Length: 171
Ligand SMILES: Cc1cc2nc3c(=O)[nH]c(=O)nc-3n(C[C@H](O)[C@H](O)[C@H](O)COP(=O)(O)OP(=O)(O)OC[C@H]3O[C@@H](n4cnc5c(N)ncnc54)[C@H](O)[C@@H]3O)c2cc1C
Image: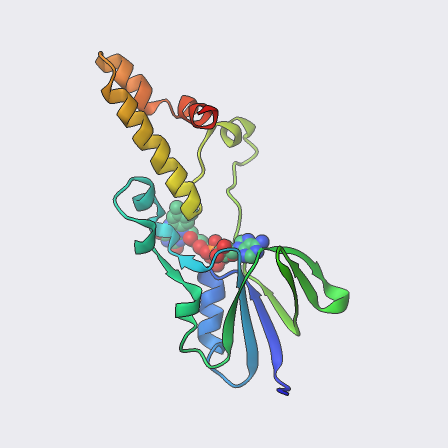
């Protein structure tokens, strides 16, 4: 039995991976990385996926491959639901994990600065699935625009994101 402390890092984004780089190859801890997805992705290039210039695989990489060369870190898929500090335990969507040290690196949510109208009507661009939804909506609108007769009709069709949002969810 190892008497090393177990560090659980929730979130494998910029912050979580930076920490793994520092402690994921030492003999000090057992490190468990938890993330909702089994891949890390590079948010600054998400717009390229949304615009159809890049495929998701070009900006994402599996956590298990990233950790393959690590001596003491492993990956656990799951979404954090609750932390029970009195028992040093986290509850995930698919089980639970004990920790000695817990690091929360789950990032942030899209901030609409209290503007409910934008929150309801706009399309977010924060995750790979957001980018794919956006790409599908844009391409669908552009395809529909090609079937319209006048420039005015096409412009309206292609750029009316508000309609595009509700249209996507209607169809
Ligand atoms: C479109 C876009 C462009 C950007 N461009 C730039 C740029 O050019 N330069 C720059 O410096 N910054 C940029 N940023 C900001 C940068 O991406 C963030 O500052 C950075 O990703 C924050 O790192 P983080 O580790 O805190 O969170 P994230 O990188 O968001 O990582 C959070 C991780 O936690 C996981 N997670 C979240 N909730 C849970 C849960 N409940 N359970 C388990 N796992 C969970 C997520 O899956 C994710 O892997 C951009 C962001 C976006 C969205």
